[in-house]
Length: 275
Image (tube, rainbow, N blue to C red; front, side):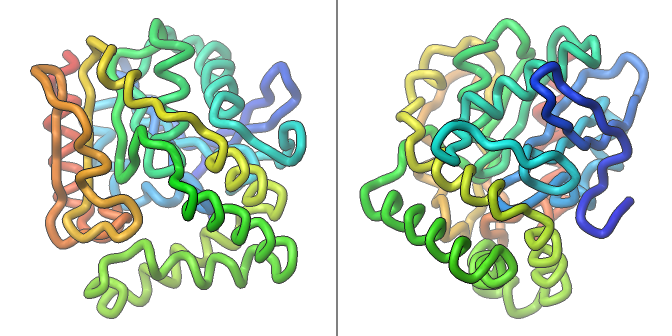
């Protein structure tokens, strides 16, 4: 394990992009891919990969420009969600994994939606963790522009120092200072181009609510009771027999860190339905 990532493997995609990833390599169990959020890395999952590994083969990758992965960006410095989805599809092909359950946190959820839209045949199930299929509002788009300007002016470190405390619930921000500092340290491992590319990509992502409405796959929608970034009502936008809604109490936008035991229990309930 490194300071900024739990990746224990790397591979190079046909595109030339190098991806670092954690792989528990657990036999014939279901494969579950974890996609971290903005200015994070696979280390966001460090408290949950071991217990989840009892029920599934866990793969947690560093998205391009984050953690130990390379920094290539798309046109106009924009990493659209489809670009990350294509990275994941190529990665699964290279690992000879035909199907997987993909769970995405925040930015990772936007990528999981793009993946479900493009590569549903590669999925056994998927889920949004503190994420939403809804597009950015106009104020949110302005905030993306402000983020890009701040990163270019002052760098990633200053940006994540302002961003990360907002990801925790108000109480946890005060009582979990070591965890907050750890998340900031992880964020500092994001390249400037990676942070800019992701911000621009999130700004232009479309409404993918129809992806959730159309899918017949098992779907996990996981929200934090005190999430001030993406409130639960923006996550719980669909319901149905294959939809599993989980609300983590006493958690903000980082339940895998704030309430890891409750997070593991919720994900294990979902995984147990996959066979």
